[in-house]
Length: 134
Image (cartoon, rainbow, N blue to C red; front, side, top):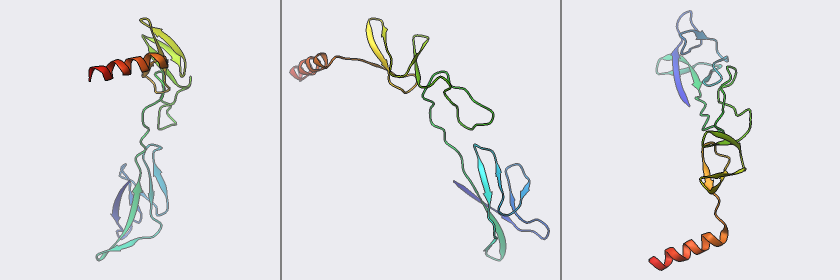
């Protein structure tokens, strides 16, 4: 969150937004990705009365799909086809197993990530072999 102050002049009351416009006390302005609010009451800063504005920057994080879209009315991308992954150029649904060069992989609900599916017994044998080498 960022906080900025705007000095209250003889005829201008409110907060100056990034667009250069003065916004009245108590108003909300900005975009859905960068909303701001101007304080209702001025505060005394030294010998000057100022209005404080609070602005947020929305952090979307990574989308959980490879075919995400940006909508003009939303800040963050959305996944209209649900969670999915990319397997050699093919979009597969989240949780589904696929064969990639003879290895079974699973779309682990995190977009591009494909995790190899290893049977429990094979994993135990691999761990035992590794331990013998140490």
